[in-house]
Image 1 (cartoon, rainbow, N blue to C red):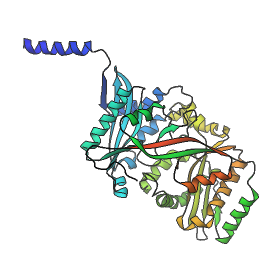
Image 2 (cartoon, rainbow, N blue to C red; image 1 turned 135 degrees about the horizontal axis):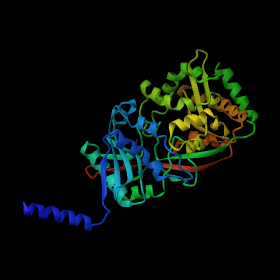
Image 3 (cartoon, rainbow, N blue to C red; image 1 turned 180 degrees about the vertical axis):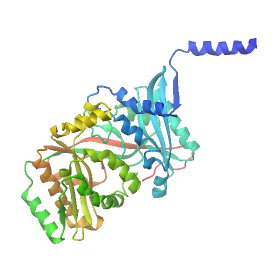
Length: 403
């Protein structure tokens, strides 16, 4: 007994002598720990001018399998890092069955990644998610990605002095540096543009829009309230699944998942900035969803859902002159018929009528030149870039791949 006690005392002495520099990784196991996981970036970036606080209750729902249908077909694990007993980082690991079935790629995902400026903390988190992924039989790790394209994705690598939109996240420049030091390489980039909205649309745009609408007997649906769009929602997501289906990392969106995300975003939608175009049989051929910029409103809410709701009731979102472009889609058989001109005309004149002076495009895949070239007709600047990384494990014989 004396020998055992001596060994225990020796271990305690050695641990204390090593100083309070140890890094501990703990898996999130309960709601209390999940709340701390969700709060961490709001604490890390507190008062940072370009950070948009996470609405904590929304992220808790997104990361809860019992609430988010997109998470139910995934194997997921969350971890927090602690240094000197204080929260120092977080990361999520995701193995997405729908991604595997669609793309045939045996990749794990990482997301919801944040950490203090400490390489050892970042390394411990990445090592944890890598080991977990390997134990679950995947051959590579890919990210940052979420459950769907409605979750934040990509790591900011350009534009650190720019404000993000609410569907993306700000991150410090050292994130990308650490990932590359840990063996991750660029797999895909998205670019973002700031587009100046003219005081009036060119007459040729109006003529082109009228010609297309008349030639193909199209109808522009007047959306005066959100309920006016509901009869077309299923068709809109059908187009999303078709045209976005070949875009990097996309996973199909079923009705249950679409309803989950609609519940989150519906209160933010301005019906005047939603455009739906149908054919003579009332079938949706094109749509666009643009919203007021909510960056300042979310900053004022400071992660609190009740405060956000109060700010929205006050109409704080109407003070902005910036619009955020979220989804634009044209049914494939209408791609070469100029329908996008009619779509842009309808959205453009609504933005002008409401006094918007610029628009944020959100993410565009860097090789999607068809969309990127649209901004050549306007004064614009490419001001942000986000990157998705990939790392194959040693057991894999592949070193490169495409999604």
